[in-house]
Length: 494
Image 1 (spheres, rainbow, N blue to C red):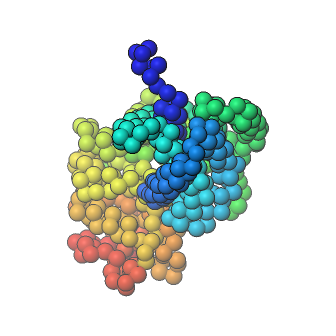
Image 2 (cartoon, rainbow, N blue to C red):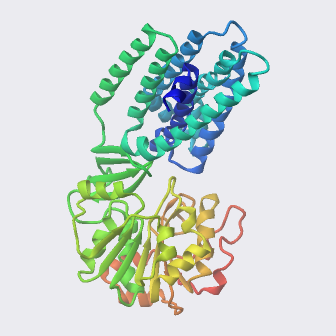
């Protein structure tokens, strides 16, 4: 082992560290963009595509630069510049992301990635070809030298991938990781032969670190977990003046707590309270995706003898709910930290009602929970008269309604009756294209409940919500065709 370490030159160390930093930077990029643009496939596509393109440009530039009097000190200078550019992201990310936000997730992701990560990635890409030129002594040995250094660089990238995903991102903030990467690059430049400059960079890193910690945050809490960028914000609703606390995951508000009373703020949570009109008995319930546990806690209050099982993928979200959203220990509440689809694949228990409230970024339900196979699993986990309550965020007409249309049709292949309740826009004279919460009650009972029967069953507060029941066949897509192709099999109350 000692003899092997003696054979490792400064070039091998530099290339390994550079490979590590590149992958950490790419992975942390998703967390930098998340608070403004989410973590959707569009964000990842922009990051991977643009960073790969920038690295390719760096390979070309580094190879060209290495032709002219290659020196180790020049390579060290390249590394130092890369470190400075990485550090600059800590300063530029907020204004750049605020600029990119109005552009939408696709264009915004491209613009933000170009502005924040292009230059650091280009300079990082220059390292490997320049190091190869320093390593090559003869033409005959060029292939072997290139192979060895690229292998070492790839090993560094593999190490950086696991380091970032399993340790750095769940443990530190994105700013702390960027500061650490800058310090690592400065130390690497020191290995390359520079003396005073890396020390100056280390001083800058320390100043930035102290400055970042002193900047007041508008949030009650902010942190990165293995799955989310989590923020807790206290604010006042302009419509009512109510003081509320909001759980933000990436860019979206996933839960809202009334700080002045026990009243539910979210309108779709209010629609959940129609559940006993469709379920004959409610003794055991399951929630897929908890957020701040607002709805599960309300369920336990409404049904004092019932039991609730919550499947929440992110343990950190549960901890935040306990610390900031009044979630307390309850013997009737069981939390399972697991992917909801994985849970459904293996669950053997039967539930009277299942609430689907799991969301990824930008209003999208995780795709693995939207398929007919997933909905069949939901149906199998319900009792014979069980009910599935699904929260969808979508428009009712036009392009914004395409997901709702597809999910509705999928539900209709599994459940005999569907009841659709928009939270806000439910009349033809309203803006039906604007995305909103739409709660769908899917029942295994084939008998159709009319509006009249629902009104007879409902309390005064429920009757107000029942009036939101819609007939989706009345709404049109952008092509003017009926939004649903399978509605004929169901009888809708208007």
